[in-house]
Image (tube, rainbow, N blue to C red; front, side, top):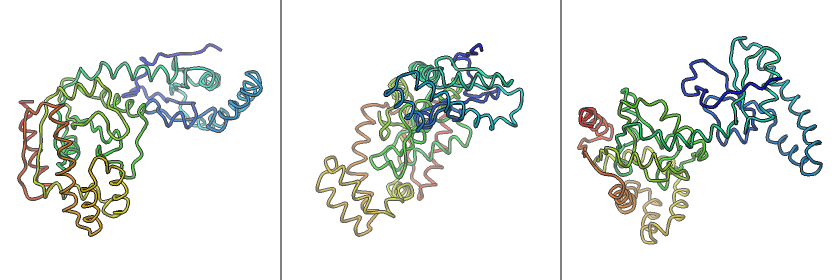
Length: 352
């Protein structure tokens, strides 16, 4: 049977206006590392089965491995077909595996034989990954970013969310990275892989309108274990930058809310702090442990941000960003300060 291929450039995975069903037939482990946005995972060989076939190949060669693989794949495709009992006849299916080889061809052949219009992505996931890398090296220059900067606790993330709700375009890097962006920012969070992070960053970029401003938070090169792609990072560091600042009491209010997990689990906080003793110093560590053990949270947080976080952040900010505007809140509560800064930014839009 003829193989039906489409190029990755033909796949409209951003809007998927033609409502194609994208099927990733790789194993669960491969899918979890990264996949095309919107794809569903229907493995023709699951994690365990791939290992079994690999062992057979090493011990007995390709012929025996191919026979065993064919038997398992045939069984799994019969189970996959049960998912297609009520599928509309006119739906278009796109199938891919690691490189558009035997796994995707197997399912694609059966789907076409029963009348489902199905195509294989030429080059499979490898071609998609290649496209992601190439686009992240060129696409960022097409957009106009406005960077929101300010030390920990100033409400940059909440401000981005408020801007988004008002209809502004944003990219929330910390949300994409599933990390708060600080040394204690992985509060019971599991970060995606670097490949998945880059895929979703490209997905976010591709939905932007180049004629409109996109707001983004200032970040260092790394967010937790993940790295921001070089071209994208260079673009945002050369963009218009607004530095925001709110009173220390409002920052404490915000930090206690965001890092409530550590307030409820002080022993884990102490364990984390001990791991960064070389950066914070023995004296600071001992003082902060005493404050934590006596539940003096305001004193601890204020000391940590003023003696550790703020100096580091300000050094990085001065080295990597050019401050074009400064907005200082002077309200009584955190929420009031965010609302005040939000209004100021909206009023600044014509100058950005």
